[in-house]
Length: 400
Ligand SMILES: *Cc1c(COP(=O)(O)O)cnc(C)c1O
Image (cartoon, rainbow, N blue to C red; front, side, top):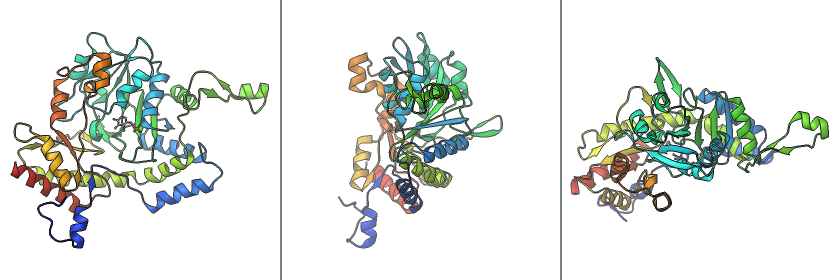
């Protein structure tokens, strides 16, 4: 699989042929040392590193509480449980998302329903949400910060009709938005009950697998902490009565705990998060600069009131001019592994067959899906890598 431009097998060519994924982790020696230190310590699972990680996450985002768990999916599931989502209730999310944003409703025996998105940002808007809420309403609304770009949660909350807002912020650790002249971080939960993050390796920071719920509601946080460990509570009154060993199960929970090894890695990663975010912002700006005059693709819009975490660099190839499949395949032949985000959730066979969703229900998201392709973007990428992607893309677009 050699690109047309590649010559002999010299070092530059070999380097040039190294596959570029759409995203990947950034691991430094300090991460490795942190994980090793945890392995050498007394605690392997939830211990002092977990507490430290949770404190750091809450402080970083500007929220009162953080509850770290085993994945972003677990974080969504537990949040729905803790907000009493269940049979006869309904969760509404953007259809342009990873399936986990909706599956959490099904885990609880509730219904999942969807909203369409804005064609340029890929985010749910007040208008698409209002339309989706009629006539049945919803108990929980889950806006997704698509690609790391903040959705307007304040406006969404104003039309949500009393539903709980839970932000799916799995792309958005490090993202910020402007409100009344001040910048706030996603995760501060100023207009939501909770925000959920993922620390999967492709996301802005990683703990291997992992996730967290940020919230300003201490009662909710306490319930989440019980639910992540079987619904078990160790309460001083009970221990006083029966003995220090005493614990009791108060509701049906799960084992969704994060280990101390993961949390130690999380502390090391979070202390470098701003640097990684800055690198991705610089690389994204470079893409915008180099692709700005390209007429067959639409770039992510510039919005002055948000700063994306740039988990993804999503572009749209205009299908009237060029087929996305062709662009994807031709990039892959050149060692560039772009990705498509996302097959709209309502179009997956499971959702169609079980719940009767069908094509045409959310036309803007479907059109977005037809044209979207996420170009490689991650903290360890170089300016040369960006130029390589841009050159390849231009070559492919000229040929077609
Ligand atoms: C990654 C992701 C999740 C799930 O996170 P995991 O940690 O992989 O379980 C949920 N929602 C969105 C939008 C995601 O990108």
